[in-house]
Length: 276
Ligand code: 13P
Ligand code: ZN
Image (cartoon, rainbow, N blue to C red; front, side):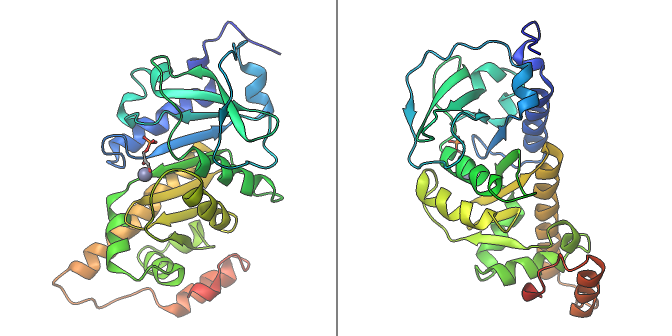
């Protein structure tokens, strides 16, 4: 049932979207326009949308987003500052609808002063598409941020999944429970567009978090809290790693491999033991 009397910015998913932007900015994850966020609208969300005029021309995508034709996504605008989103959501955000061929989109709301969706649009959409095709693994939220400690880690450790994951798992004992599949790693590359998007979307099939070396982190979740919680957990673990490794005090304790194997057993085989 349509509820055209409720302004779009008051709809629950839009309010949660804005809240995440504010919280990410408060965490220091978003210098300037760093980072971006997207949300894939559910059929229940669509039922709440007011009638929207979709008059703009289709804008081509750099990649085909298979299986997602006709779907709606709420995104941050390219160049938008996360801390400014709550001040003027209609300027800083946009709602897009993919055309049926999933090779172009139309803006149906937002960008009130012009502009375009985030430059990482292809990464966000290809990530949704990757997960949507996997039973029980579809995600509604894709979140990209520039958390300082994770970025620092990518300068100090070899850029392989095993080294990065183990450093994080052994920095805070909740980590192996919260991201048992580990963290995927994308080497340093030019941001924006289909190339980094394709690589990320392959890794996001099997990981809820993907590190972009020297750049930031991509996290996905079924909910805003899941995606944001993963971002802050991974950055906190990276911070602890840096504190411990950078300390002049001698380390006397560690999370041993034997404990990780115990966690693997306790988690019913969810933990990727190849990464221990
Ligand atoms: P946008 O402002 O285009 O979203 O870019 C920010 C960013 O973090 C690129 O990786
Ligand atoms: Zn970025």
